[in-house]
Amino acid sequence: MTESNKRQKTKQAIENAMVQLLAEQPFDQISTVKLAETAGISRSSFYTHYKDKYDMIDLYQSRLFHTLEYIFSKYANDKQQAIFEVFEYLQSEPLLAALLSENGTKEIQNYLRNKLLILVKTDIEKRISTNSLNIIELEYYSVYLSNALFGVCQKWIARGKKESPQEITDFLSPLSNAISEYFPSKKA
Image (cartoon, rainbow, N blue to C red; front, side, top):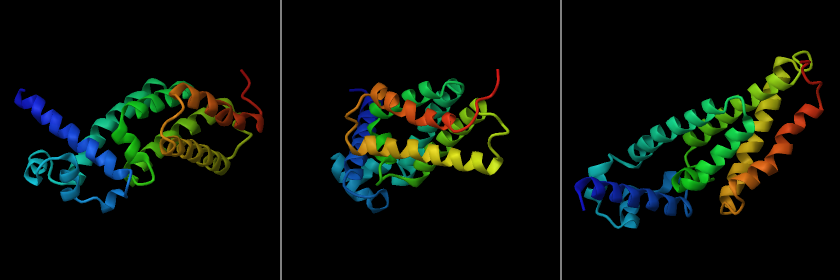
């Protein structure tokens, strides 16, 4: 095994250990010692890769934020596809799902909430007559819907991601589109 493969395997073991520990306890209660022990490595091996658990998550977050930025910018005009892609990514990334769970980090949770808020707000602005909502109403509706989407995301993770990304997106579609029933649409 090459050095690069060994490093990657150790980092993967550390990520898997973090996922396992987040299922049991909040991020703030996870120690580096416990993380190394769960990963089956020595503390010195952990410190070869990361300064501490925060460094590990910071490095992971930078990769994650780049990927999520790509998804949200690629599908800026297609809320449905953006939501589907996020759920697909969550399904393939156990550490991200763990960090978005109730035990995860607030930074990642707030980041995704903010991205969903922008997506929802943009969608509302595109679909609804501007004279139907004032700025305050737009803010509250956007916050309400984005937090609802995030809550469904957390519930899906807590249930073990039993539904496929397509099933959960199909479930969310009528809920996220319901707001248009309350206000007149923009005239084409």
